[in-house]
Length: 342
Image (cartoon, rainbow, N blue to C red; front, side):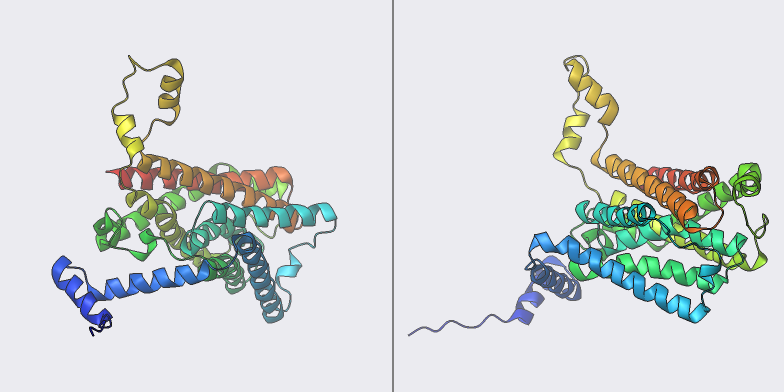
């Protein structure tokens, strides 16, 4: 009677390696990640996002409790307590919107951590540079916000192929090239630095005088240079991960062929309008959507955090401060999008 021989996983992988030239370690890692994703998918989809929200709020609450204890309430000296249900509702709803955008747009933990670093960083730079908050406390607060978004997504959603450097993603050699990575990070960091310096010299200084009641100084504190340098470099890294990497690893699709074959002579009015408005390649669309999302989330979060959590900040001042970071995000996205499509 014939017996079925058990499959030797190692031998199979070795055969694949010799036949296809695929590194055995990469195959094992990708298979493990796939198995982990399958285990995570056993959770009912209806409870996954609520669980993400609960985990995020829990990590944030725990982190800020530790910071307040460690700093003896230093943040409380300049940050006000929400006094009305309306303010509590606005900030809670906005945090849920941030998480929902990431979850339903199918972002992974790296995407959301990058988005949160870029959109929450302006508040903590403001506190350290102009409100005399210890830079370590400011960086700690930013770390809590980033961790509160990173951990829940890491636990409930696997990394995308682009961020894992999977062999199946297009243009893998581009995102793994060290020189391209360094240059893209430096480009985004340079754009952020230039925009912030010019914004401060042209209109932010006046905004601080007119609309930031109780501000300690309108000149950035020397101690905050560490926060600024760290934040600018981190912004470059985060912008690369959020915009450049997904854009560069987007391959051609059937829609791209339709765009390339579009004939304005034979097309109808509706088709022509669509082509003029949204007739871009899939790669370009990824860059546009992510850049606009980054700018909007950065602008709204910076405005709300400045106007509703810091004592004496008027809405007009919060809007001006948010506009500088929003412009930096837009220009950084444009720059990285241009490089990613070359």
